[in-house]
Amino acid sequence: MHTSTTGPAGLLALPARLLHPEPVVRRLSVIVFVNTLGSGLSMTLGVLWFTRMLGFGAAQVGLGLTAAGLCGVLAGVPAGRASDRWGARPVLIVLVCVQALGTAGYTLIHGYALFVPLACVVAAADRGATAVRAALYADVLPPDDRVACRAYLRSVTNVGIALGACLAALVLEADTRSAYLAALITDAASFAVVAVLFAVLVPDRPRAAADGRPAGRTGGPNPALRNLPYLAVTALNGVLTLQFAMLEVGVPLWVVQQTEAPRAMVAGSMLVNTVLVIALQVRATRSVDRPSAAARAFRRGGLLVACSCVVLALAHGLPAAVAALLVVAGVALQALGEVLGQAGTWSLGYDLAADGAHGAHQGVFNTGQAAAMMLGPALVTWLLIGHGLLGWLLLGTLFAAGALAMGPTVRWAERRPAPVVAA
Image (tube, rainbow, N blue to C red; front, top):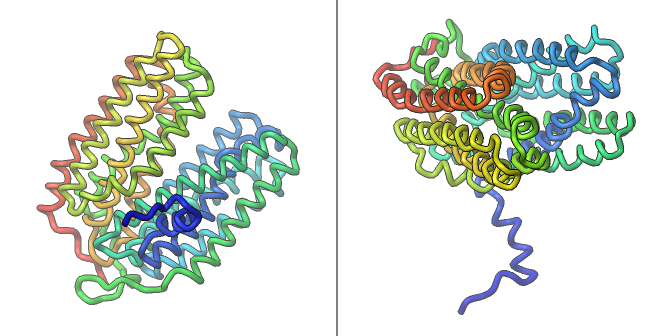
């Protein structure tokens, strides 16, 4: 007999169904949620704190954040290498504590001379932590299910950021110094809580390398920097990473300055992306079980993002309702490409790395992403706002070329053995 699950018992069972069956993933989900809830606050309010409350000019803030972005790019490789040497968990705890102190420091500074070095420290800790976190996942997640677990955690990430942005809206409505201070302190506290949770909830379980030598004790030259196919994969992933600058910078500017679509479509486009990523990211990983499948997922994802550029470009000069529909369609295509591309790159980032050196490889891999995120806003603005329809076509061509190049690059990587890791 069929039993309905729409009653009270069924509703109470819904949260349990959303929990991951792996205990370590459930613990990591708690950590990710706390971390991204705070990040959602700071991502929305950070620039406004510097400009509205501290009185820095927009150009000053932009220059400072560019310098911070460069420091973030430089931090990934040494942070990843450190995680191979001393273990991912202790290195990650240190970096998260630095983020907590740095974020709290934003509430104490009053002059521009302190803002720039502090922003550089926070950015370096942030990008270093991103690389080490990926290495930690290699240590503690089940190897056969690692990509699917990362997809689940990314869905949690989007939920946390969305809720953090909602809290930020309350701060924006209040628009007082005390409200901004409370938000920054909350973000700093979230980092402190995350550091404690990593120490308490995440097992300190070094992964064994293929030769039986425990991970976390490697020396010698950085094997990732000698792995030419891996560097090529990293560069192609950096190309596709430009889609985030397109979504976060290019689409808002395009909608407001170059189309008749309502300005509310800026927020609407972000909502469409967030909902689709939450709903589809885990599903997108189901067929990504080997490097060749990951390359196909990356290719499909990149081509979908390229198609989204064409659709978004067509919104120019059309009536408001039609333009709005094209913006939604373009962002939906981008989101579909994003989940496929992310599924492919996660798998390649792990599967093509040398045994015993996931930290070094994730450091390099995340450095490629950090470089793209640093250069992306300026490049996207120059292309889309400076060159209009032609810029969209050039950007789409770049995505398509990167997508099509991944297959041959992965086949090259599979033919060439990874460098041996020194003990």
